[in-house]
Structure formats: structure tokens, C-alpha cells
Image (cartoon, rainbow, N blue to C red; front, side, top):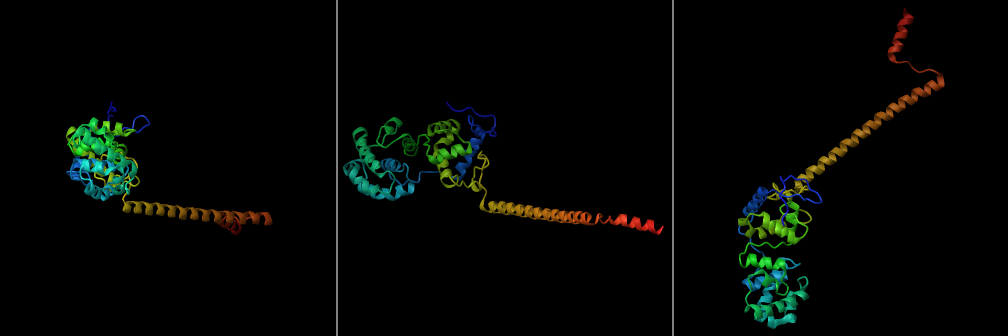
Length: 296
């Protein structure tokens, strides 16, 4: 089930009801992304469905850059499932040692290649159940293959898409499956196909995990993130303004303390004179009155 649509995009956040974009805002958000990232595609380098499948399996908990660096040599040695199966786990391992979890991935790729040969005549299947039955292929990997290789309207929620969906209010959810369901339910059908890569690219290059660059985000107008980052120049101006305010407050405080010290000093002097002589100098106006009386 998908979450109920709030009345407006300004619905206050709460533990039970996270902030969520309105549906018109979602459409505008995605339309703007399609303008910024026209014809988006995966950054993995591949030549066919088999190479794409291998690259996506290798990319789990690893960067596309590291996969692209290792894959060419691996595919030169094993360009087909048959060659990959013949290479085996021990033969695959040296090519992918610089990729995270390389031991498990080498084992999975060797088994996956055999499974493709035995179950699918060496071809990559185009259904989710068949894909997820392969070694090293989970829900997310299957979603990527269905979207990229076979043009199916699916979404694969990785760490970038999960972050953007929750941070912006596009499709909040506590886990990747919930976020995927929300995205599929809320993104217009005609925008789902490119949405996977559009949202991923936004998260990878702008809506970053630690320092989101909100000042240059093309979708900031619809984003519900309440702690948007200022641009470096705005931060500098804000910092300068804050420092100026502190300096002025310090000057006022020092000035007030100086006046207070002078007042206390004057009172102390008068008090001391009264204690010693029993009298204090009358105010200037009183002195003038007394002189007038004496003359009269």
C-alpha cells in the first residue's frame, strides 16, 4: 500500500507522517530533472546484456568508476558466459581485486555464468523472478537490468535514490522497497523509465550525502528539505553578518559597562564625601538658588 496523499506539500513532518510532495509537485520535479538530464543512462561501460549484468553485480557496494576500471580486462579474458564459467572463481578473482567484496563476487560470477548456460542458453533473462534466481542478483540488480537492458518501467532504489526520495519528500520510506513502491505509485507512468537514472544522477552529483549543493539544485523549488545549504558566497556573507552582529553587541556591551562604571564611580565619590564631611555638593541649580537668596 502507498501512503495517503497529504492535502498540501507543506504538511508538517512527524514521526508517523513524513513530509511528502504533492502530486503536482512530483510531476514538476521530474519534468525539471528530465530537462537537466536528457536521455540519462548508466555510467557503467558495457557492450551487451551479459556485460551489463556482470557490471551491475560488480557495482554492489562499489563505485561505477572502480567497475569500469576492472571490467575491460575481465571481459577481454571472458567475453561470454561460457568463457566466464571456464575462467572460474579463481580465474575471475585477480581481475576484480580492487573492487569491494571481490571474493564473493568472483564466486557469484562463476556460478552466474554456469546458470545462464544451463537455464537460459547463455542469454540474460528478461523477467524479475528469473533474474533474481541468479547468483549475486538481488532485487535492485534485477531492477537495473530490466530498466536498462529491456526498457521496462522499473526503478532500482540505490543509496542515492533512497536519500533523494526521503530528503526531498519525493517518496519517503523507511526501506528501499517502500521507497520503490512510493516512487512507482507517485511518478507519472510516462516519467518512470528515465526516473531511475535522473534521480540517481541528482543524488550522485548535487544532492550529496554530506554536503548537498542546494544552491545549484534545479529542483530546489519543490524540495521539502528544511536545512538547505547556502552557496559558498552566501555562507561567507552570512558568516560576515553574524560576526558583525557579534562585534556590535560586544561594543554595546563594553559601552554599557563603561557608563555603569562611571556612574558607580560618581556615586562612590559622593557617598565618601558625605561620610567624611557630613555634606555633599548640592546640584548646580540649588547652588544658584541659594546664592540668589543670600543676595536678596
